[in-house]
Image 1 (cartoon, rainbow, N blue to C red):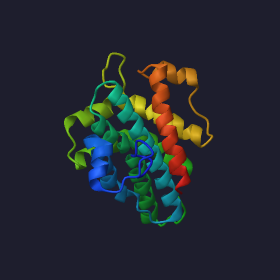
Image 2: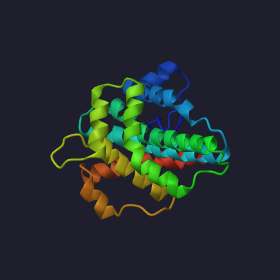
Image 3: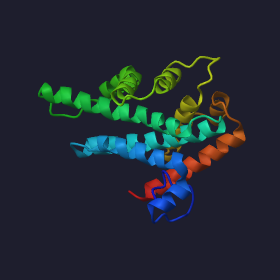
Image 4: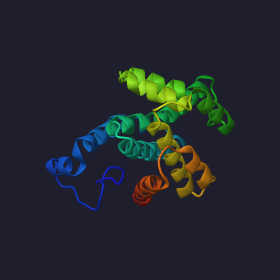
Length: 213
């Protein structure tokens, strides 16, 4: 019944009902998120806040990528799962930096500038490492590479578009600076009407998810 997965106002009370309401791909998405969720266990409150925000961003991007993949008649559940990887890479990198600081007897939290530099430099390589550790199929690696280094003539747009839409909606919801509307419309590979549908779904998810915390 999490707003990240439930497609409507139904109250799901059994596994059979969940399968009926969510469908096979929806169940796969729930499982993918459940498998990755233990990575959010935090050592302290600062790490917990970072992990919570990164996870919300990841779920929003994953849902956006899933919906855009459906528009393109592509694999929705696979795009949901690969859409979670960038946020998990963020959490992994932050933990590694904190571990390095502890190893050098630095008690304070990593400086924001250091964290930002590490995220920018190692995000995509960490995504590929996570995909390797979980033995994900080659297409996941190809999608990640296409999102990292998009080419004008490529066909693999759902992940990159999902990351763009998801990131923008998370920033808008948090009242932070974000991509201009006309720039977003120029970058994504769906129509304005399709973009509105995706945005409405993830905005509902963000609003309901925010009320749970």
